[in-house]
Amino acid sequence: MINLFNTNIDTLSIHRVGNKSRSEAIFLSDEHYKPTDEIIPLLKEYFFKPFRDKEENYFQFAHDVHLDYHDMYNFATEVFTDPSKAHEVSKKITKHLFEQSNHPHIKNGEVYVAYLTNITIDNNPVDAIGIFKSEIKTDFLQFDEKGGNIELMLQQGINLNKLDKGCIIFNYKKEEGYKILTIDHNRYDARYWLEHFLSVDTFQDENFITKKYMKFVQDFAKDVVLPAEDKKEEVMFMNRAVNHFAKNDTFEETAFLNDVIENPDLIPEFKNYKVEKAPKYSIEDVTTFPIANAAVTDARKKIKNVINLDTNIQIKLDFINTESAEKFVEKGWDEEKQMYYYLVYFNKEQKS
Image (cartoon, rainbow, N blue to C red; front, side, top):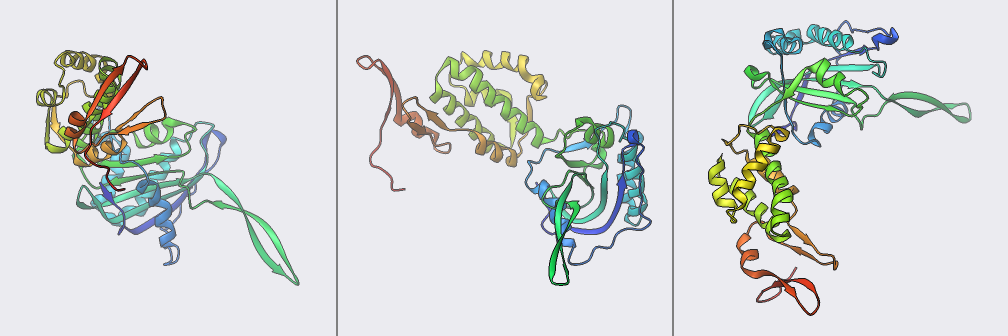
């Protein structure tokens, strides 16, 4: 989890990159930019808002041989070692981005390199480097009084409500390639920003593995439990699965299967499903791992605990008190109406 609320922009350098295939130039500022007190909160909102609104899927710098040969990793390390070099290194970063700007679809734009302080990640206070790029220009009207009239002037600028590209490199987990968050809203060339410029891979920490394993379990419930049992049992299976993750600090697959799968015939089905589908979720060899509570909380919010019936009736089951659905909801078949039914027991109706 990250906290950008109190983050400061200690230094900010602004450059411009063109498209090499169109023979557009690169412009590097001589000195770093000194924003006024009026513009700082606008820049912070422009830079940070996309990361506050985005699910935290982390990346890390990756190299086939060694991180010592990774340009961006070395640039980041140089800045973190000596923040006074931030502006000079920002020029190297911008040149590196320019060298990747060969695809004809890549747009020119301004590049902002910021040294950030007072960021919290995983409850650790760290510094960070923010790299942001604005590409899309927006038309806007400017007004000018001339004599007794107001005249319109058409100008262009950037929309502060939408950052086109950006990443935050945290001074955290250096040995693994730093923890990195990135966004790209203009996906005209999906490889340009992530692969060619940043050269990153997914950061496979406990948060990543917990999310992936829970998504795998959810798909197993939909693809195997539902056809073998019914919708109620699919929901109850996910109930038990989420609660197992919530009450344990460490995941152990055998304990999970014994705790969650009530029908023993589904255990070999689970193992076969994992052999077949595991590469899709990057959990081929995963049988035990530390559980990330934040990932469990996020997953619980996304898992549906509702049975939708074709008679326009919904039955919502409680994800916390799973024994209620086990004891007080029964499914049956009515011969006279030739329809399935759910029988729900209760003492009195609760006031909403």
